[in-house]
Length: 434
Image 1 (spheres, rainbow, N blue to C red):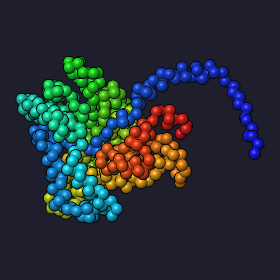
Image 2 (cartoon, rainbow, N blue to C red):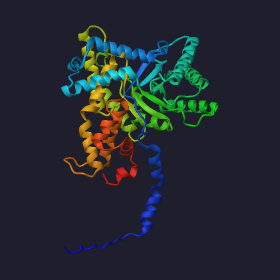
Image 3 (tube, rainbow, N blue to C red):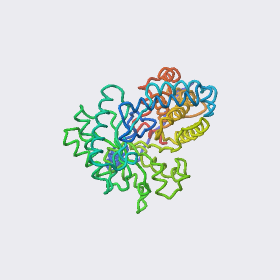
Image 4 (cartoon, helix red, strand yellow):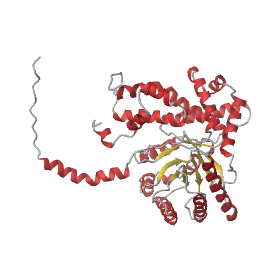
């Protein structure tokens, strides 16, 4: 065969045109990097457990695990029984059940918040002072002894005038106690509730700056979650999305947006019988949160159900099915975290999460392997899809739904490879023009 013809390449624009355009867009490039740094690449817990300040003890995490195991033993003693309650297919019954039990034995709680807000309520100042100091001591001891949940911290009272000084004092006592016990743990998480105006977020930033300066900490060391519980936090009076402004007001310190199912629903006038995380009002709020947070490195968490799995077996099974269904619904909508209000919610939290990742494992692994090897297939994936596939597998690994060995066997990739696909450089996603 003859040599193919080499096409003549011609242009019309001087090189200076491209350089001028690049110079004009330099501020935008910098703004993109600042405002949209992408996911931090750290583990996101699958849930947050709230425990009232006065109820939190050194044995809380283990107690929640033991109570959850006892509920399984009583109401679904084997894999077949548990699968029948939740409608799990036969091939997932044993893998999910065994992993749920192992999780409850080894790491029953992924994220725990000692609550000084609604779950604690108003108390005499001396009592709340002492409770905050005790929470700091117990959390510091748990991290030192290796018994802590991966993430732990407090939910303070909000920045509204009536409780502002109390919330600030509680946070100061708690953080000071941690510093006196050896420093802030890596898993520290703080939650600021009932945020209505971006200025309240700015106030939290100034408060943390002052604490960091007082203790010689690196600026920006302390981050916090913003709890979305009011209509004003979604839509401002001028029609703008307040939550997007709150993220920017946090000046890089915001780590998460947590949806408050019941406060938000009540704020909109939803009757108590219909206050749930799958109500249309909840879906609207979380969709706004999700879009506002996309690309910023701020993660979104769903809320909770207040239907507790307690009482006779039939009632527990109904509550389990409800919680399992809500958790699966949230996962499908990319809300990878939620709240759990009772130890009995743990079995279905982990069952839903593990089933979600295990049922899609082989397909996701095969698609990613084809993409990585530039092989063919019936789906033509691109870098953005490879990012989603890798993120899916990494989340499954982090929570214990998947094992490193099986993912490596099915994909031919290491965890470092997965992280490379999950967190590409910005240009890697836009180079295809899609």
